[in-house]
Image (tube, rainbow, N blue to C red):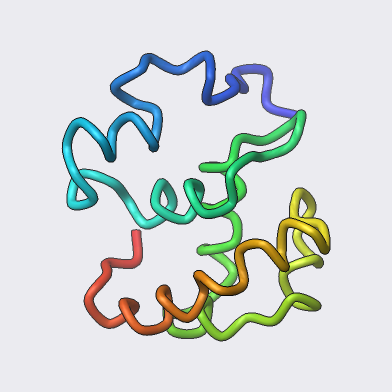
Length: 104
């Protein structure tokens, strides 16, 4: 675990993905922040944003991310079967929006 790890609840309000979305709109969020909102929570050692960045770094495109299955998602520490099943309906949106989104 990184010694400088902070839970999203400890971030300043304007930097938290959900609050940032409400205040500034989706254009102000990175892909990792948007996906973190879908994921909902990280783990005790990693924020949802860090987990999203880790997932994004393992794929070559957002389209590939959108096509991931539950069995592929559960291979990431912090994504269990229940969370994977919960977010699966949203992955089709990621696949559809992928060409329009920036991979950052």
